[in-house]
Image (cartoon, rainbow, N blue to C red; front, side, top):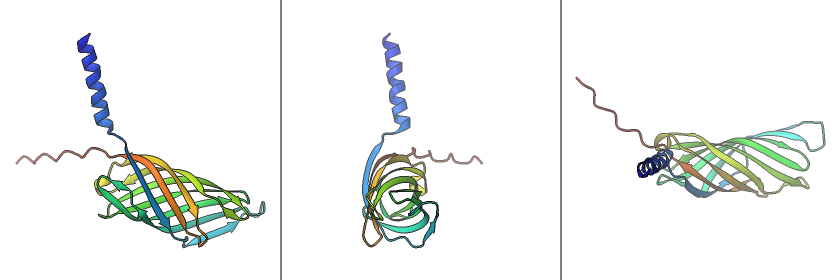
Length: 174
C-alpha cells in the first residue's frame, strides 16, 4: 500500500514538473490613436459600422516574462460598433527589450453612450513567441480606457508558462 501511495505521489510531482507552474503577470500600455484607421458604415441601422485599425503601443509598466521586460508593440484589430455597443478582436505583437517577440489574440466589448465608448473589458491569450520565449503559453484579462485624443490606456493581468528548455544536441559521431 505504501508503495502505491509513493508511486502516485511521484507521478503527481512529475506531472506538475512537466506542466510548469503558472507565473502571474501584470502590465500597462499606452496605445496611440490608430493609424491607419478604416471605417465603413454598414447602412442597416444608425451608428452601425465596421472598422479596421492598427495602433502602436508603448509599455508604461512593462510585463516581465522570464526576466525580460516588454518594450513596445502593435495592435491590429477589427471593430464592430453600434449606437450602444462596440466589440473588437485582434492580434497584438509585443517586442521585448532583447528583441524577442510574443503574439496575442484578444477579444473585448465596451458599451457606447452618446457616441463614446466606455471602458473595454476583454480576454487575451498567447498564440506564439520567438527566441527565449518560444513555447510561451498563457492567458488573461484586460481593461482599456479610451482617451479623448483617440488613444487607449490598457491594464493587463494574466499568467504564463514557458516550455522547458530543449536539452543540448548530442555531439555528432565521426
